[in-house]
Amino acid sequence: MQLLKYIQAQGLGSRKTCQWLIENDCIEINGITANQPKSIINPDDVTSLSVNGKPFTVIPQPYFYILLNKPEHYETSHKPRDYPSVFSLFPEHMRQIGMQAVGRLDADTTGVLLITNDGKFNHNMTSPRQKVTKLYQVTLKHPADQTLCALLQEGVLLHDENETVAAAAAELSTPTTLLLSITQGKYHQVKRMVAAAGNRVEKLHRLRFGSWEADKLAPGEWCFIKPDEKLK
Image (cartoon, rainbow, N blue to C red; front, side):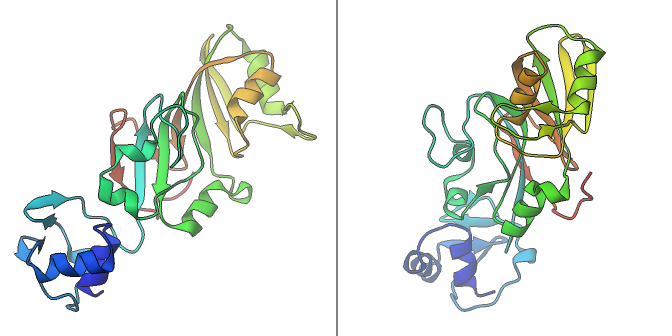
């Protein structure tokens, strides 16, 4: 990959800006000045990148995959209305490279959120045909018993829907804490399912999406992940 194209792909500016940075000895890769725009580099060999001595996060090429522990009161949108965007949690140069969330989480929902620039991966993770499991921890407004779990697993009819929707699994860890697994991705699905079953969601946290969990990340923290982990 040409150095100029690589620097552009890192979100450091237009082609003209990146060429100027390179030709004026502003770019260091792995601690060495890189000043030849047409020189060839292997993106997999890049471990550090700095501009005018300032370190920048190295973005994997050509695709990147991110695991974020989404905090409360952040919107999964590039154009948020009421709260900051989850994308504001990332460095500025990363926000210039077409980051897209894999599905959405409501502003008040926390937990696992995947972000990528790989459209095929995004589709595979969200397509109902793939039946990728998402596990939620649901705080209920009213204490419940196994009747609620049975109903959710049998299937409930959501408002404005013609077919019932069933949970892949449902169990109570406490009378007001429900662990709910789903493989669909309908709008506000967990909240609507619980409402259809006669209860209400007070708090919602996604524990797992496919194979990925974010319990080792503090709210707002993120890390790059590999996309070839087995989906569960």
